[in-house]
Length: 385
Image (cartoon, rainbow, N blue to C red; front, side):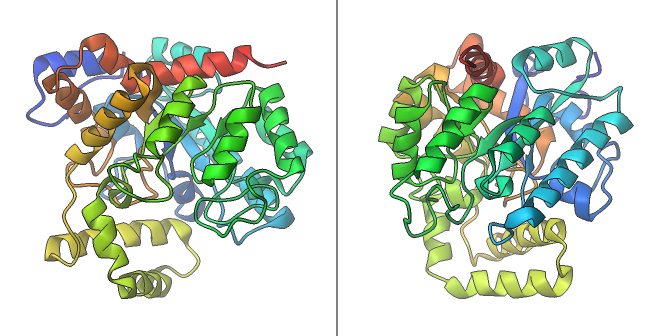
């Protein structure tokens, strides 16, 4: 198989390397789609910037990755839909361009078939309910084009669900929002509760007849960000059969980083000004430039340095709270600031090495790497009416 360990990092034991590369490693959230749209980006070439391309996914043993379809929450209406459809087409085009390396997938069985053929499974997730323009027909269109999940909100409320980073407007889900959940259950789409308010989360768990997941959220007990999940939410998610996919963004991993960032609001203004000057309307450029600036500030001591080992801390905590069957990986590659030592997908074997060192057995590690996500996908599909 082409999924090989060539070029992987030093310091990985032969046991960890063997385990990692015979596991199905799944990342449930990456923002590389923006590069496809704005930068005429080719996944097949090795790139010096960003986190995702085929060579580095191969080196990291990544077996399946969900590309997020996203537009800013300020972009609404039919324009958001058209941009979403364009992004889906761009993802699908990459599979056409690289048939020996990539295979479009939507289900757990699709992922396994891609693995058997030596290909990386490429999946689609809709990031933000504003992309469906209050129209269940659009939701159905996304599903027909291969979208496996939809994140209900992004940074702002939709007109039917409250976001974790906006002032509550609906007390969770509106009546239409409840119709969205029912339709997603019928379509076999995973309901993604990353970004939603705590009340929206509660409403989803009460209503959904299928398990749900958080495609890219970490643990609030370690880093008190509203985007992270409280221990109570993690327990409830697990009780529903769901999975919390740990996010690698430094601001969701480290309380010290988040506190320092909040204490210096001028830094966010500076990032916005600098990225606008350098990138204009190029969203992919803004994301990469933000990463560069923030990493420079960590190097200079303006912000605390965050190491990749914080990812393991969050995984370990989530396992203690939820149990081994309810934790996975949702990196946020190409959409957030990565910690030192996890700059791109080639470094993923470090997670397997660290979990072995912490005493996890091989079967448990394989669940975290992707097995739990495969099980959830199967259970969501079987709950389809």
